[in-house]
Image (cartoon, rainbow, N blue to C red; front, side, top):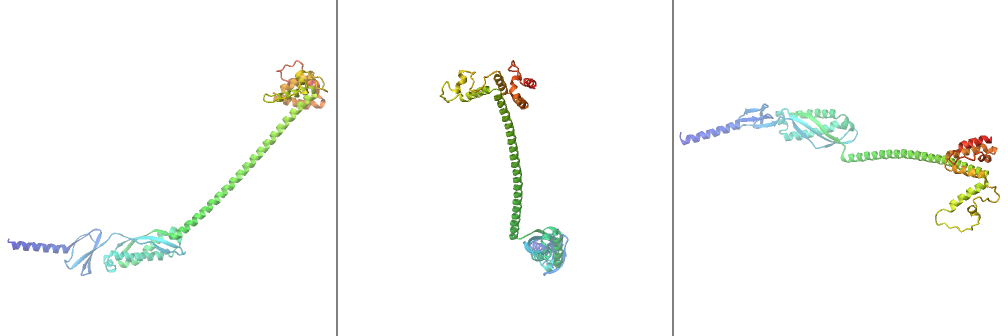
Length: 362
């Protein structure tokens, strides 16, 4: 075979390759094809695989048969109660009729533009018939279904099937939202202040009741203490009065001893007195008798013993007060010390002696 034959064979093979490339085409499983002859649709191919067309005369355009996404910019809608809403929605669609799609819109970009306009008009038409609460809360699912049905009626002429419509967000405009937020915040603050005022009122009432109870309790305690103190002072005065009535000279002696104890305490006090003054009469003579008083006798010594024991015995003190009250009307206060035995030991209780003396006085 000569060189010319080889060249001719190569040319033939190249031409056959070119013809085959223009005659065969592949349709992907996610696509559907439309065969055009000089721009005139001749065949719709929906099945994937290898297909044949007339070379150099026919051409093929592919259309996606998957579900496609349509997203639009948020738009403002006025509800039936005249409240403005900013609605953000999207749709899902697919090309159901490639031939109708090609004749009506030509390509996917034009189809998205037309569908976006249809979606916005359907949103305004459907949502404009409903109230704010129905759009935001109550009937959103039903409203989205109605929007999809209206879109399908208009998109059918484009060979498009709208699969789904969703409202992503439906809110008040930003200015309205801020105003509503401020109003809600003011309302919550007012309620909080009201709750605080009620709490302060209850707290003040509780504090006032507590203060009143404290004042009443302290007053009652003070009154009881004063009563007890007064009763004790009265009993003490009665004892000293009875002792003074028994022996005035002993009482003068006892009071002098108390004066010595108070006046001669350890310290810086200096007293300049005459040795023969009335203040020091018991220093020179323990048995001194003040002028106008009877001698200090056995009654005084017994009364002194009685008072000495009385200072440290509260029970004895109360018994003595009761006994003096009982016998005072009959003059028992004067004879009571006389009823004590002369040989009563210092550590013997005086109450039995008082009982014996009271029985003897009667």
